[in-house]
Length: 465
Ligand code: ASP
Ligand code: MG
Image (cartoon, rainbow, N blue to C red; front, top):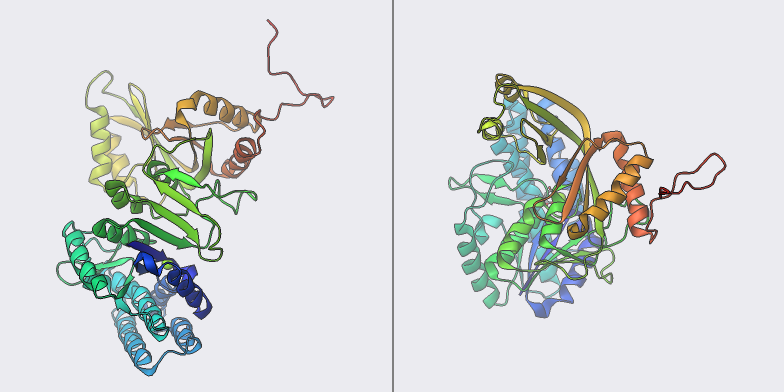
């Protein structure tokens, strides 16, 4: 049994859905279970429509209706599906009318609203499979056993989901049914619809795979797998064939737009491999993510950057030599629900990074009672995933490049997971560093380009003794 997840771009219109069916058909013997995102940019459109209802007071779902109705028409799907889809539009329209009248959009309502994207896509896809004589059934995640807490927008699945998913889907597949399940959404114990965070259908897929002890999860995207760098930045970024779970998780946390950061967890627990594939180029081998450590780790496997990061420097004013300083600092952040990405510490100070959209006023007020706090915005984390057993070599080359580019490294951390080295620079410096690091680590050129003298001759790095 395998789990196949298709993202929005792999389902963007009728043509893409036909293409998806071909991909699934080619793997039908492996007993796939499908997990789908919303079609194309539907989730964004839904959020836009909420903004319109809220600010302008009217309901606008034309873009969403047009996309789905045209797809149904292009796929020549029948009247009963049209009716079902129109009922969903009616429900969506009513919800937006409610928002426009109350001028209120709670987390709960927002989750209910964005759930329509996935609920629409699975119904259309399953109907299309049936029209091609494949016995598919559309399922809303809650019907397949997904139950979460009530943290709207970022809900966590309850552990009993695994048992419920396994028993429901095992029974269904035993009847020869191809389940087509909504990614991204669940319901809490009170029956409210919740979402697992943007991009959350990757997580839905890995949870199903773990529940069913599937042999593999395939995540179908619009890129040839995990790339060695962001292709918008680095022209010759190349697909990475094999990475370990740890490496993939670090890449996801530090900016690579490949997998939902939490999506690796269910696979890590169960040892199920994940294959990231390109639905626009199914022949490409993609990236295989496996339990580590993976053989033949190169010096550098991939480079990512995460921009718009805030750096907070906290220096103890009172607690010199006393225990409990770090515990107090972290407790302030925890109390305020602020998650910390990177840290570096010394005896009396700690530097840490956070996402820029966090409100730090309360934390800073509390901390200033016993520490000097400096908040620096506009920073970027550059992360190198590679062979950390050769970290001195990586650091040597990296600092050489930073020096050449006249970039000051403001903080550095070698991940405990032993796969990444991350450092902080100014936002505007990140692109050139990533490009230069990639050029160096991936072009086969194993020395940083030497500084030139005025006469154009390279300066020797070696000192004469
Ligand atoms: N449709 C949701 C989103 O765009 C979930 C997903 O695609 O994974 O975030
Ligand atoms: Mg999506």
